[in-house]
Length: 442
Ligand code: ATP
Ligand code: MG
Image (cartoon, rainbow, N blue to C red; front, side, top):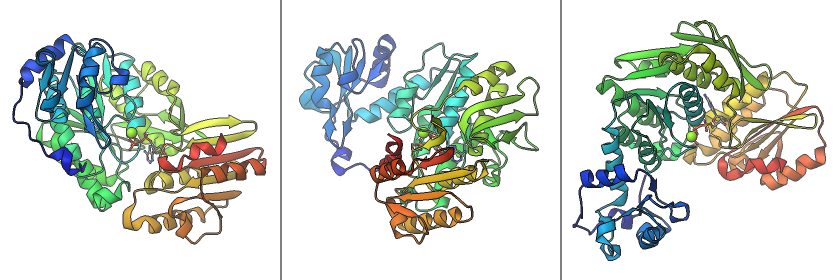
């Protein structure tokens, strides 16, 4: 992550205590908070800085609100030395404390990264694991330089396993998270096109996500790999333990059944699981489900618990939800979009058996110089299938050649949809987060 200059400069030389001393305080008060609005009595407040705020200015208020301790990095706010640590950089101190805490555990740490499906996989895996083991997993999408250490600092001393989502839009980010989380196990869900602005190319994405494999290769690690992605199989070479899942010739084998809106998976390699009718949309969730099956069986979770944990998991956040509206079925996938997840969603939608299928697709952001080309590639893909209607909404779709309806934004798409009065129709709604495509059906 590129920080504005003023956050990189640091004039403090005086550090009021070391990490071991802070760790002793943390052991007494093991709840970290970075936002005074959510602070509870007994929390340790970390005064992080952002583009529009300086946590140091809230440190005194945090203590007044009952914080047990505050970590700050500007001397001017070092007003209560007995309840404050003055450090050279609060974020770095948070990361060092997380590493210190990490080093107190001798349990599996499973890191999950990849272009698409990290959160879904993390949630499926952690739902399965927590049905039998004390599991701490990343909450929501807190997968960055702040979220990773905060997740580690939530792990209680009696935890049996930790599951950590790691996101990245630049090289060396995953490497830096691995240095803090020190994973013993890893999953790269897949590698596709996303954040091309930051990575430069798909090759850049591959190198960046591969930093997880690099760490595990160097530290006697174990990876779970979907053997349907040859590039992942290739990249995982040399890692001491490679466990595979997929549709054939893998350690854990299953078949996707996705002719309806929701995915079912039939696990054939291991008895007792059988068919899992998931609440997830799309064949593209097949590897995510199989990852959870593989991890669950590997860590000794009973088959029936794996089965029911996956079958009952419902995604949130407009992440591939199926919504019934009258006689219509809406696949709401407005959480985010990039060329690879769009392609997966369109191909999956093409495979659903239904008479009337309508797509409302919002533009994809952060694609850099290839943006128009990537939007055009999707338009070309769309044209291979007959659809009842296609509406392209905003973004660089405006610069593509297409035979479809183009509308400026989600609000315009919402009015269009209202006018149509569709019945017995399947609708796929997807687009980048900032397009707010969920508003189409509000
Ligand atoms: P983020 O980068 O925002 O953290 P993520 O990698 O955690 O995203 P999810 O939140 O699990 O991904 O899923 C986001 C979207 O990615 C889903 O709604 C779906 O469209 C798509 N997706 C999920 N799994 C896959 C997959 N295996 N292959 C392609 N696309 C997928
Ligand atoms: Mg995520």
